Image (tube, rainbow, N blue to C red; front, side, top):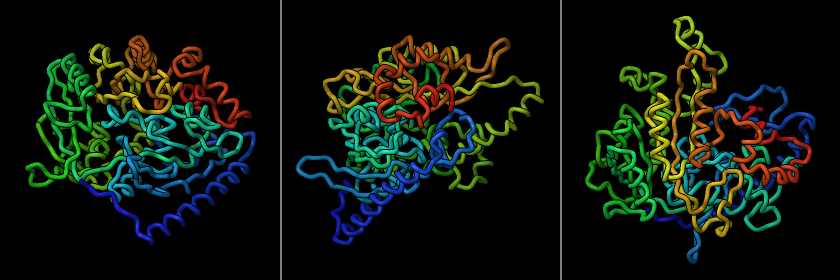
Length: 483
């Protein structure tokens, strides 16, 4: 097992310097916010994003919070308490992993893509294969310092003066403020992750196995630390069960899916595997799950020519962003007589008992495959444990097991249909089955339905308290109206 490092005197002095520099950055952020035009919408000055909805243009200056990157301080756990880290809100998970793994730790949940920031994962939700036991990223947050719409920096904790903001910040997508720093729980890491890929010939059998693993955190006598799955068809689906390990477990070397080999294809051909902890955490990033095939990156010839350090999700995202701006391929398709296409890029949380029904409906109605499955359950010991739905803007029930279903592609717009029709049908089916969908991509709800699904009655008073002048767009304006 990787041993968490003990800080030397030099490390402690360096940590104090980082803390002092961080405190100065907090004051500078307040001054920068105050200098923004008071009659213009506030936006972050960011070059990258993991959102998949087009935003309306603005010439207003952006708020630069780039100083809030990196780990400020690591605090080893003592007397049974978990280890924690104070981290900047704009720290990417790639940087978090790079800085924490040498200390022997990782965040409780590491979302799949390298450039997701921890502030973004908390205000916009995040998920990964540890979520069946560790919940969502915001559940391991102990406190946040948030720059609010009135220009103040407040410390939000579960039971303090700003508990209302702490509770409604998850899924608020920057409509209530920006997290400048977060104190998060960590868990010990080990050098490797051992995998088992288990095939199922029916979705009912797969979801039954998911329920068993979520309840016991074991499979066939082995501990399970990570759990996700891929559906290739209604008759071919796999669960991947991972566990931390100190050894290669009989392999000559860990597998490498950062070059010519492609991780999701290995699921169909291998029953067991071992990856380094680092490569396991980013196993989906190299090919953006399987979406790199849309750019030709899975063609063997192209892949050999594609620079290895450019096989990563943020490169593909830039290609998509270029196409969204210039519509080059869309114009070529029209010249070829092909129909326009609707973007269907979504993640939805479905109660486990309805997951097979939803996936069967999806495979029948929407021509997209494969489909990703990621079981998730809110942490039983988390914030407001007595509350059945502790996070009102994404009201998952605490004792309910869910499965995140992810699907990311485009579909042809059929004659007589309009752009958005497929997404609206998906929204309706998700709601019918008691689920919710993440808001990082296109949404089509009317305002009344949206408020009912995403905590509108709890959101309104918090919005009024912390952004009384409306410096930030509302959640509905951001998620549906793309402001």
